[in-house]
Image (cartoon, rainbow, N blue to C red):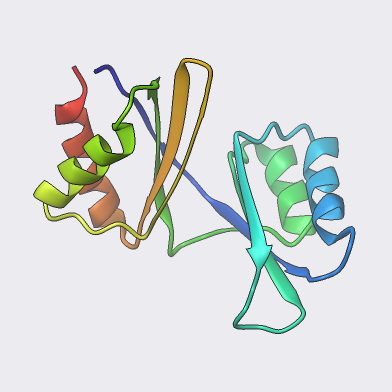
Length: 142
């Protein structure tokens, strides 16, 4: 199966756990011309009254400046690969098993399919693990 693989920088922002906080953060990015391909937000159970949002990509001086102004920072603890391919049954198993066989530990995974395409964002705790994951998945791509 042909996999389109790309290393992605993940940006993160802390939010107040209140209506409109996420909307305002995303609006700031939108107004700077950011076209997000991935966003995931959640409450921060370890910090009462707070939430967190992860997004990608943010590129270019104007977008980076707006992201920083909105409280976003490029994470140094998340190293991510975006996998785009045709959606097939068992895709998640195939990716997870390949990485497990190579003894590469995952930090997290988010996946979605729409129509015939699937997009999977796989995160690792270290740059070395992400590089190993990229090599592993390149071997899987045919």
